[in-house]
Length: 82
Image (spheres, rainbow, N blue to C red):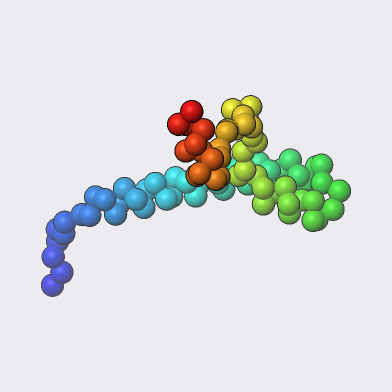
């Protein structure tokens, strides 16, 4: 006979729920892109590329800000010492 009550792994259940939520979000984003692309795409390749890139977000000004980064550690250390 099977046991009527078993312990539920709440961590695994939570991870499965999060995965399902993300999958559902991506589905609706792609579905919206399909609807938009079906009226605007000139050919199938353009349609496919639009749908494939639907989950990507555009860059903001903050993302484009130049960050000063010195790859040469010797130069970086000598400029900090001055």
